[in-house]
Length: 68
Image (tube, one colour):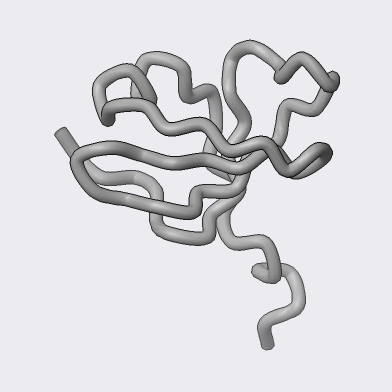
């Protein structure tokens, strides 16, 4: 299994959060993955296998477009 995401990356999950936001920021990477909702700030922790199943797309770092 290839690691396609890093700490601080913004990801899109298959289902949106209850607040309506679909973008999440990765705040912890290890055996478990912790993601934070970009709208309401709610944090959710799930195991890596569950995260990989629910992951739709990796957008990259939050400030990626500002790098030169």
